[in-house]
Length: 283
Image (cartoon, rainbow, N blue to C red; front, side):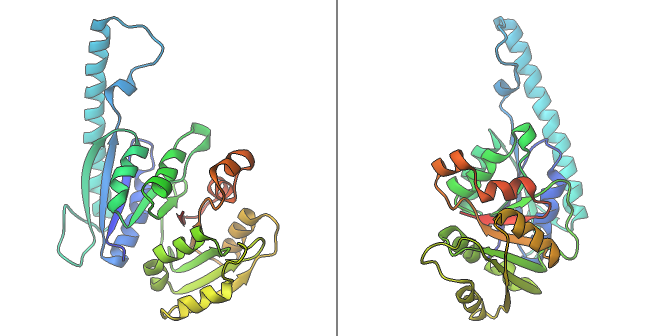
C-alpha cells in the first residue's frame, strides 16, 4: 500500500519533475508526499584547498549560512506553489486526500535518503546526472541502505494522463525483480494495461514470465507477455517500452554483486543512463 512518498530535493533544477510524478501517484493512491529539502552544511560550501585565517573562515561560514537560508526560503515558496498546482493539499489534508508536507534536513541527499527512506513506501528521485557526478549515491542509498523502491524521473519530463496507465515489468526471474513486483502491486493494480517484458538471460531456476502472469491473475491483474529478442537487455527494454507505448517501466535493479558492477557495469546503469521514461526499481 502506497501511503507515504518521500521526495528529497535540493537546488538542482529537478524539483518540479520529481514533485509532479509524486503528486500523480499520491492522487491515485490517496497518499502523503513528504518533501525534504536537503540543506548543504555550511562547511561544504567553503572552497576546499584554500588556506584561510580564522576571521576569513568565520565570514565565509556566516555567508554560507545566509545563502542556505535564502535558498531554503526560495525553495519552500516554489514547493508550495508547485504542490498547489499539482493538486496537493499542504501540511496534512483530510483523510483520504493527497497532501504534501515540507521539512528540512542538513546533510547530503544520500544521507537524508538513508534515514527518511526507511519509513517511506516509495522514494522519488531525479535521474542521476553522470556528467555532473550527481545523483548516483542517492539512488543507491534508496535501493541499498533504505531498501525501498525508487521511482527515477528523467530530465524535465512532466507526467501526463498516460503516466502509469500502461505499466511494463522487466522480468528475469531474479530476487530484485521479484521485490520490484511485490513493492509495486498497488501501482500495477491501478494500471489499465500491464505487460511483462522477458527474454535474454533469465535467472537460473527463477520462475518464468508465465508464473508471474499467474501471480498477477490471482490478484485480478491481467498481464500480457512480450518476449524480447535483442542481446542488449537495456536497449531492448527501452525500445520495447516505446514500441508498445508503456509509460512506466518496473525493474529489479543491480542483480549482480558490487564487484561485478564495478568491473563490467550493469544493465541497470545502462538503463539509468539511456532512459527517457520514468523507471520504478527495487533491489
